[in-house]
Image 1: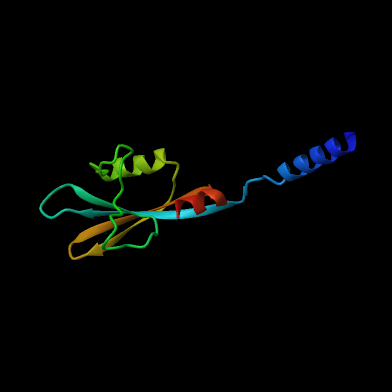
Image 2 (image 1 turned 135 degrees about the vertical axis):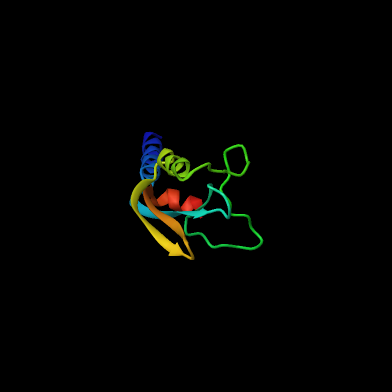
Length: 119
């Protein structure tokens, strides 16, 4: 009887010892694009996480209560990215017909399991 209990306990402990999460880390990148609005001092902010754009699915950024996230200025968008844990890499302007479109690069380190749950 004791031997059966010991074998059962050994099997249970050995089964639970393989329950480890994958902790390997992956860097993910995103880009914030600031485009000036026509006849206005404000800008339109677009955040590109690298996901596929779809006509049928709305990929606009939403707040936690479900409303669409709007930014007042470029600095507002950059501060938002910093609060979310993204690290600034580089910025560069692209001149386009008398206006400049600003691109800001960010990166963030995720665990492999987090990346798989986001997809």
